[in-house]
Amino acid sequence: MSFELPALPYAYDALQPYMSKETLEFHHDKHHQAYVTNGNNLLKGSEFEGKSLVEIVKGSFGKNAGLFNNAGQHYNHLHFWHWMKPNGGGAIPGALETAIIRDLGSVEQMKTDFIQAGVTQFGSGWAWLAVKDGKISVMKSANGESPLVHGAHPILGCDVWEHSYYIDYRNRRPDYMKAFIENLVNWDYVAEMYSKVK
Ligand code: MN3
Image 1 (cartoon, rainbow, N blue to C red):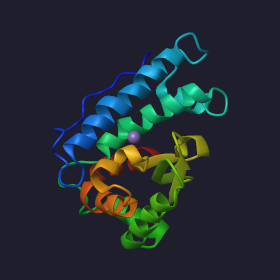
Image 2 (image 1 turned 180 degrees about the horizontal axis):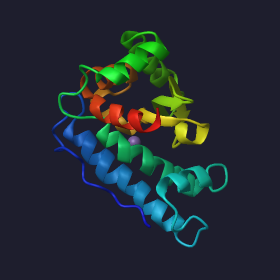
Image 3 (image 1 turned 45 degrees about the horizontal axis):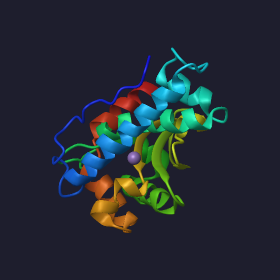
């Protein structure tokens, strides 16, 4: 199979004022498209042709850096568009909220730790909520890496590459992280991913 760029699940201006139309046009149409195009070129003729995306991400990590970077970012961005929605944030579905409180102390503590993970990720990368051995934890990773290559399952990720926030927030990554967790997260999608890996 080859990689394909899906359409955004909402209009380009649907996440304003927290994420602008211009940011989504560049981020989806240029950056995600480049991961798809470059990933397909690197996949061609490799040992990973015909594998699933998750198999490619896990299999190429530490073995084929070019393919891993692009496939990893393709996986991350496929979910990133769904981890956000217009009028996001707000109430967390009950079973997920209970698990967050059990594993991370409280919803407020989870938000604080998630923002801190994104703010302290030096350079490009991602902040995560991930599940390992049935337990939710906050993680961060560099560049195109995700919990998938660190023995865990991602259920929420926030892109902290500058291309994700610099047009709207300039250097204010903490403000972007706060807007993401309070006003953009699609908790129904997070709960759906959680239910598959808990
Ligand atoms: Mn990105």
